[in-house]
Length: 369
Image (cartoon, rainbow, N blue to C red; front, side, top):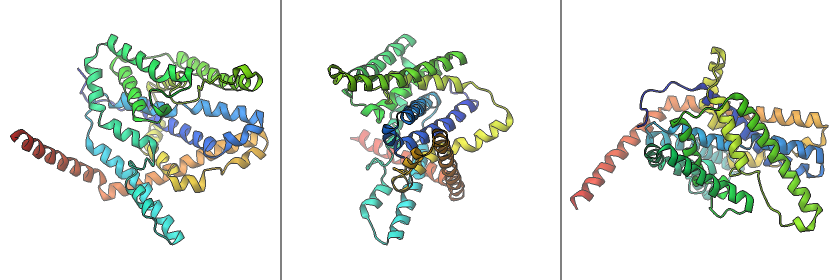
């Protein structure tokens, strides 16, 4: 049976949320910002930028694992997903309205997207997580009822079918969209829940060594495969992509980083820092990935960094990442204060209660029939 006792807050997990979000910002600065594509003509820059990309690539998988580790053993309240929906709307709707006011026109499609971000997949992670949320109770049942041996076999099967084979054959036959899907998040949820249920612990040395090996292997294979494709015609059909969320090395990176951070103990000053930034971490993603923000302030905006000397380029990337994270954190802190004043949390609970009452009425009618 699951442990329903009140759980002590794990500041290691909270700090990992912060670190992972900074890594996600780095991915978007390198990718959306144009640095990966723009650096192809600069071999040294390109290799360094790809190394940074691979170092951070496990961040989304970490969030998926955290969902399972934190979610398993807890009640999944509908009010939490309702609150999260309002948080998303806080970014999409006002920004869209301000954009239309500035350019003095009304775009009904833009308003539809802002109000219904799930239908239009404005944020792929939120769309996938929204679907995952309603399956969490059933995934918990699987974790509860399966023996440890059965869960091991299930996770091994998931790793082979969803990760290893698609990577080797370079085809997304299981339709996980290379990790951009509910199906992949559900797999990571099971992995996180498994590590929680059986208290899986790796040593810090194992985590550091394992992460380093996986990163270097992925980085090396990236350029080795490119070299073989370009140098020898016989290898033109060699396709093996390790830089994707479903790659086994990226999955292992996520596991090692998660294990490294989850049991770290922090001093009081650090706990205050974590307690301040952790609740607003997801807002950083919602802020800088809002389509209009991304289009006007991020997409292709950092290619000029490549014209600077190597050290200056790397420093500009780091400063940009930290700046986006800080601005996003500040904006979501303002959002959090506004939500407290408007009692959005209580409103979400009220909607949940109304929903339960409606559900009971519907069930009664069906039972009568």
